Image 1 (cartoon, rainbow, N blue to C red):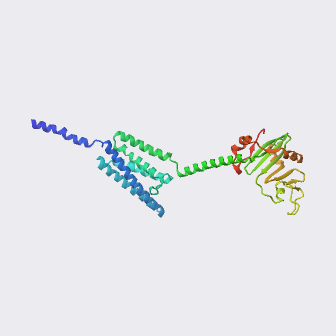
Image 2: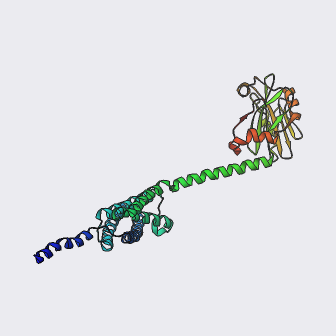
Image 3: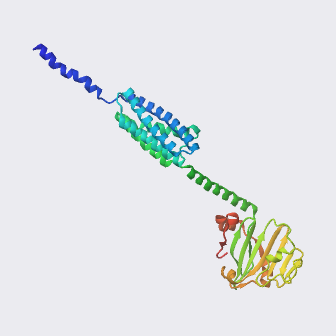
Length: 352
């Protein structure tokens, strides 16, 4: 009976070791397995990157595919072996899953330019992060629960890293946009410092309707209360022109060059540094490298700014001495917001 009792008691005692072999590996054994997996991933990453560079230089697309497949098989097999050696569990599904994760991330990073091949040593820290987070995802399959949660967080963080990291194309676009902003700010500051502003008039019965400033020249459209329109252009840093060139600037419809090229046309009269139409409806003045010309506009050019007729000789004669640069405060209010050098648009000045 006593022997029977002993034999009966041996059953549960024998079952204890069998149950213990089915227990999950300890937390620290799992951590060691994850760390070893990260090291394996880094080694395979370097090897696959090197082989990919060789295949790219040789123009062998099949070579790239073969490299990725071989790397996948070697890494997944190595992770299975490492997990079995450290934790006593092969964790086949987990090994394949984290290998697939690393492969997908690497392919995406290479295709978008986020990850340069590791041997180029351009994105080393990013490669370390990808391999570390991919290996940490193995904790989901190894356990215990704290490591499962950490592994899930690592996988989510890796996806976030991919989505939030700008591609080289996006970075270049942002840099160009910022450079554009910086250049524009510098151009606007230089424009204000130069004080090369459009000319306006305070002549009674006249108003400034539209202006355009580029930094090298400026144009102003003026309109009288009766609908007469004149345009004034001022240009800086003007070299001494060909004596006949200003006649072209103050010409217009019906004003042909009716004399030889060495002579002034009959309608263009020069007096010192001033050129004018014979009827006084347009004038060009050059003074110490600054040129100014004023001309009456009719037709569409007048209608565009709300006028009806061209300014006549009397209007021109009255406007010239009344011209002065626009005040800096007005420039900052009306011109500066859209100022873009030679690409600056015309700006309407209602009630100016």
